[in-house]
Image 1 (spheres, rainbow, N blue to C red):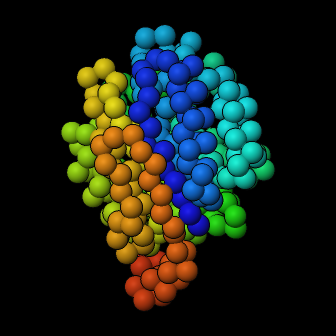
Image 2: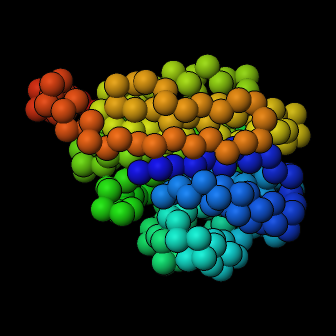
Amino acid sequence: MKVSLIQMDMLLGDPQYNFKHAEELVCSAAKDRPDVICFPETWNVGSFPKENLSALCDIDGQNVRNQFGALAREFNINIIAGSIANVKNDKIYNTTLIFDRTGEYIAEYDKTHLFSPLEEDVYFEAGNQVVTFDLDGVLCGIIICYDLRFPELIRTLALKGIQVLFIPSQWPFIRINHWNVLCEARAIENQMFVVACNSVGKAGNIQFGGSSSIVDPWGEVIARGGGNEEIVTAELDLNIIENIRISINVFKDRKPHIYKIN
């Protein structure tokens, strides 16, 4: 599975520009013929504009469905459409939409853990479902940004048998060392590929850190972006997962009857 991460620089509060630029980046990434393209978090609104947020949001993902469904079909590519600020049932969600090669919308996930230091929990409604999906016969999972700090959620996905975890994000430069370490740790402890797409640029006073990462189940970084807009691409050798899980069988050796997590 060949994946390309769109490490996008976007404009705060300007969906029109961001949609246009996103399409340009898909067209550029498609030249390398990846199997999957992934975008960062809330790229449609350029991170988290609190003023007029509802008016800037997509409505039930309709704009993304129209644009990215068509692009996935045109280029015969699976697309993880990052995440978007999205109004559903009169509430605002941080939603990832996923499209297969035919342009069919096959799954969506609403961010579970909202970043309270920035009042995400005030403006957004939290999701409450664990989501897996199939891309070209590979079982995948999805989380968004701050979810990375909650190993219980990711272990739940691992126990469902996923091989690849996708993570759209808007992770700040000031804590980029946490991002790098956590991406590698989640890959190692769950013996899966972690494909984590971060943004770059600035929104208000926040500088985003890039460092989009593709990490194998041994924790080896097989591709990592820098601090500027770029497309980060690597091939995932999914055949290595079985041998890793046999040689260090953490799933077999678990003792769930003694774990108490409430």
